[in-house]
Amino acid sequence: MQTELAGCVVVADDDRPVETVAGLDIAYDKHSDTAVATAVVLRREDRAVLDSAVVRGTSDFPYIPGLLAFRELPLLLEAIEALTVAPDLYVCDGYGLTHPRRLGLACHLGVVLDARAIGVAKNPPHLPVTAPGPRRGEWTPITAGEETVGCVLRTQDGVKPVYVSVGHRCTLATARELMLELAPDYRIPEPIRAADQLGRRRLADL
Image (cartoon, rainbow, N blue to C red):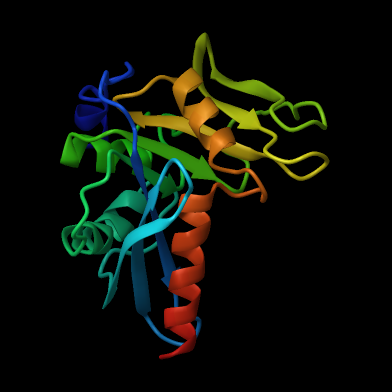
């Protein structure tokens, strides 16, 4: 299924402007099989929160490396459906093309929704990577053979980088520029940082 869906990924920029961005995240309860999926929509101009949704549930699909979307996508789609603001772009806490079959979570979600999507991961991928320079905005490509599938991006001076890849309907250059713009103060871009914080708060309330 992943191989088939990977053929549907579009690596090209959509002409429509990006004015709203949704960050997506899933947090897991350490003491049960409960998961909380969060979607937070920010206005790109000033990163103000326009809408958010939280869905609590469980996943019947086990954790298997490379198949994360099958575990997380159903709950994330429920959170997206609960939004009242339709975002122009989705940012997933995970990978896009930087995936063994070129279908990480961001690609899978983007293809299913036929929407622009970008993956931003906190941890290095399965591929060799080279650290970029220490300054904000410096980056190095992530390659698989002859193909560039993502980049290592330094979002803050002297802070660990993040790993950016195309999900659907954008180019890597656009993904990199947008994620740098949306990370003015912290390592993690604001959309997924906001989604992560909301999920943690809801888990703490359980």
